[in-house]
Amino acid sequence: MAKWGEGDPRWIVEERADATNVNNWHWTERDVTGWSTDKLKELLLGLRVEGPEGSCEVTDIPNLDGEASINNRKGKLIYFYEWNVKATWTGTSKTGIKYKGNIEVPNLSDENDMDDLDISVSLCKDEPNTTLTELMKKEGAKKVRAALGSYVDHLKSEFTQGMILPTANGVASKPQPTQTKVKVDKTQIGSSVSAPSPSTGVKIPTCKFSLQETFLTSPDELYRTFINQDMVQAFTHTAAVVDGDKGGKFQLLEGSVNGEFLELVPDEKIVMKWRFKTWPCEHYATITLNMKDRGNETELKVEFKGVPTVEEDRTKEGWKRHYFEAIKQTFGFGARLY
Image 1 (cartoon, rainbow, N blue to C red):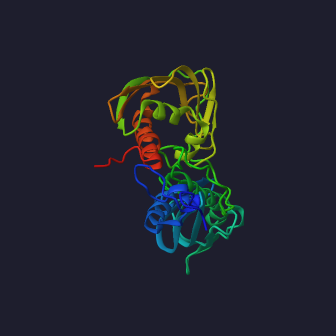
Image 2: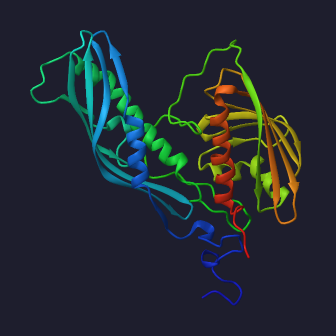
Image 3: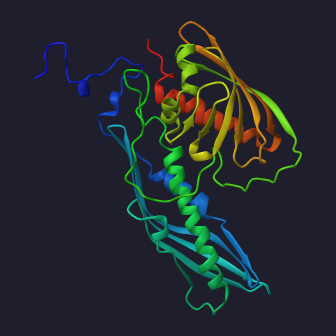
């Protein structure tokens, strides 16, 4: 039995804004079945392949049978998902003849590697034989496998906000390796499809804009959130490399975002060059973070310059969701006590 005033730290609720599941000791769970159903349909519908014989496209998802959840135990995120996916594809030959077929994936599960998925492609009953079936079996199956891998990637990076909470020192514990073994493509902030990087030497139109947000914390704590590797890994829920010195480089979200710190004024200002990996090679935006102490809260103004015009909305939404909202949910900087 612990002595008076020396309680077992596993059971001590530390002082923090939300006082919820501190030290990440208790089991917490999120049911993401509904979200998964919508995401799978979004990723699969409209998948298209073309060949000399014609084209094929996924046109319907008549059945998605399964469930998914995310669990946190002692700072370890565990993903459970099991799905039987049935889709319909429509093929059109070069001469305009249409064919219909089915796709079935019975074993999309956290227990299976993505390369081990059984993807069955067939023609509907009474349809005449066509070479489009082979096109769908070969190229179509590859795209289906990639889309299912993207679903798992989104599940891990987009739907885990707030699952890992900070401990007594204000830093969330580093997520431990999960039990899933799925090999997936990298996800992009605010985008469900990864586009290849445009080539260098291309002149592109850019824009500038600003965002403003208020956090219920001190300027020094908010400043540290952006330059401390452990804290960055906590709110992004992925491994990150962050060298928090002037000239230091950073890489977040499995390589989707990278850049360099150009100027650091402790507790007041951060200037960085920043880019999505899908932007033209070596093209960076300049982002300036200004922090002002407003008593019990900190006002953050973020100025963006050099963002490709076509990426403005995506960049805004990505910062709001994957920086502002994620930081508030992870560290309790959005909670107010009365």
